[in-house]
Length: 384
Ligand code: GLA
Image 1: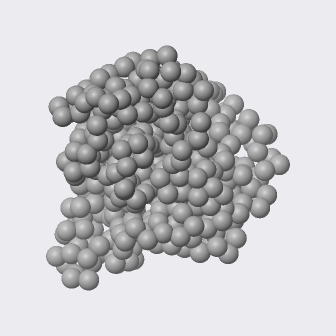
Image 2: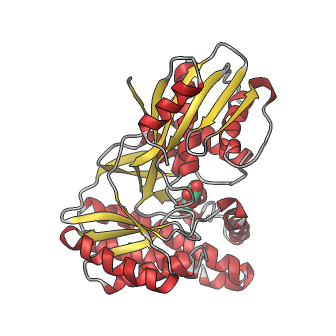
């Protein structure tokens, strides 16, 4: 974990150029999970944890990276970028995609690091990819808008890290507005900002500390299951052009055709798309109780139909259900661990969270981390 000051000082120790500084936030997602790659809606917001980039053109043909967190550096000839391993693929994927799509850059020095826990479902990888594109766009005057940058960051993730993610994380990191959530239509990329009015509730994340790895293949497998399901459904009914047009209530007769696993995936996706639209309405009506119920339902689906939960996340959500002060909770992000997102009565937050984390420790022998979140604007420059 690095602070803004540490990123900057590590740059100044390592390089002789004069840097600019940028902040690229992580994100939460209130509801709409695993539907960004299925033409659904999502409701993310950028948070005040993220990755800082200190960066400067260096007048050469070499990109020099310093990971402030890991104290590792790596240099690469801009014209000879190849797939590598670990964190390097996130930055190299960006260089690769910029070159492929004809956005020419030159050599630069870059130190980066931050306070986003990796594998916690807070989009650390999107914050790295989106943040680097944003910074390069600035120092090399590429003239890219934020939506284009998000699309490029998504492609970067698809190529070198190899996770066939949707657009939500990059979009949220680059386009969010503080104190608002974004309702993003992942089909058209149209979006609206809603004020995040939580009355006497707060959003609290509880980190299971089970670090997921989307690259493990399970994420890509879910995507394949959904593609297979939709293609079979289309053959049955021409109006099922996208999951958006498949009412969840229509699915049962196709259970045998789809097979048990693909049926469950399709049922989750169609329900989650419907749920997110309803949730957006409840949020606008300030009906947080009803919104919270949908969060619990979402978790049920993630766990039983989409099979992306784990005993630790299920435990935290089950505990949440036992406390009347928590009106909604679910696992957040890609799944297989990471954080749960909880809507908790402000005044009772400390006591409730203490009881839950104590029970968690007793059951799993692990101390869960707790984050009370503040929202943030999308990626921005910090003028030095
Ligand atoms: C990860 C992916 C996103 C999205 C979520 C699940 O965070 O990067 O595109 O699919 O999982 O909602």
